[in-house]
Image 1 (cartoon, rainbow, N blue to C red):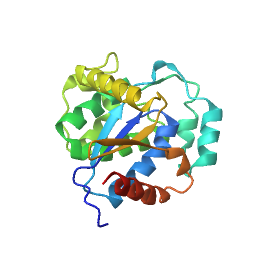
Image 2 (cartoon, helix red, strand yellow):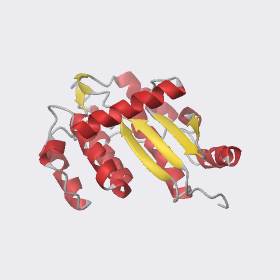
Image 3 (tube, rainbow, N blue to C red):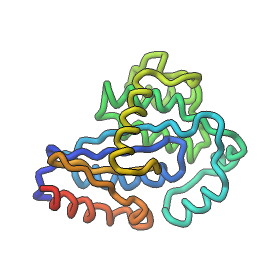
Image 4 (tube, rainbow, N blue to C red):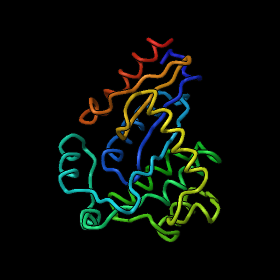
Length: 208
């Protein structure tokens, strides 16, 4: 790539327990691999707060429009309400303290949840992943009873961005470059994730 992407940023508004976010993370991986100089901003919205479930129809729809797999253990948990509070706390912390680890942490957490059926709601459920990545989050990040200040600040930032782009839909991928911001239509690329690379290239050229 001949484009100078040093000042480019990719904002990813998502919820770790959202199946559509899980599918869209594949697109994020494609962009970050193709443009390693882009700064990644992971922004967890905390949509799943323990009161809402994922419907089987959502899983069917995601399966039709993307190639991401869902494990049998995860399918067995669809009767239970989802709570992404602990992951929101953990992701807000890693984004602030060790941003280079944010994407890898997210993908490992999503694999644990959507493939292995790990609910990710207590310290024990994330300890192996944290140890593998050699992270040392404070104890307050490993609780699911309330959001940390960092997680609340992240949600505030998301709200401001949503006002700018005019949508509260999640997930959302936004590209920022030369003080311009563009919303990437992730739905266009779920069936063919590699196609987003050309789309990002075009957007960067237009914003250059």
